[in-house]
Amino acid sequence: MKIIEVDHYDQMSQEAAKIISEAVCSNPRTVLGLATGGTPLGTYKYLARDHQLNQTSYTQVHTVNLDEYVGKAADHQQSYAYYMNTHLFKPVGIPHTQTHLPDGLAVNLKDEADRYNQTIQTLGGVDLQVLGIGKNGHIGFNEPGTSFDSETHLVHLTASTRKANATYFSTESDVPTQAITMGIATIMRASQILLLVSGIDKAEILYQCLFGEVDEQIPATILQTHPHVTVIADQEALTIV
Ligand code: GLP
Image 1 (cartoon, rainbow, N blue to C red):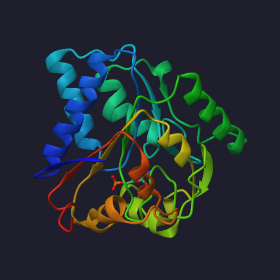
Image 2: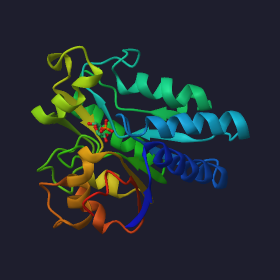
Image 3: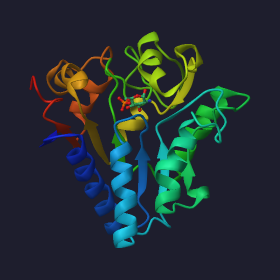
Image 4: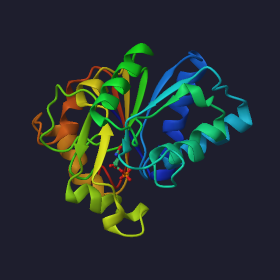
């Protein structure tokens, strides 16, 4: 894994945006795999700025997101679809039909997971996958113990993940209990992975991810076996490395 050490969150965001916009410039039909949460927000802000300043075109880009909550419509403020429309898709002008997320309102959630997995394959797979990391080492919503062979599937969120994500809801009990997430095997098929890590809260898990034994109990450790991972981490996140 290539590690790029930066001073702080803002610099991490600028570096990540640079890598993503360069990928889009060199291949306008790039398939971007995207993450939500607090970590990539600054990256999306810089991509929007770059689009305005340099007219980087996203008209042919396709996107697939890692995950979506169950029970949230795409226009619900706490859905990941809403987050992505607000922070990236509308600001950089990606046509709606080219942005893909699991449908958290699907009647049959298992079928929806299979359909989404198929969508990713039909697009030819992910060229560049942006990832954050949960404090328990989850990637996407693949919680500790998820099989490394997993494809897109329905998950029950752990208490710790629901607590961590409660910041975005009025109360912890409002946080959905289920989500549809790309599986670990699905994520690992991306040609290139960009892992973003910021803050002292992530220092311990980043250390495990980089140097711990590859173990399904810490999903992010599988990244050690991927041939093309770039980690952009700030000094706080790298404190114990
Ligand atoms: C959520 C998302 C992940 C994200 C993680 C970390 O659970 N499903 O994709 O990487 O949380 O979030 P944050 O960046 O807010 O720390």
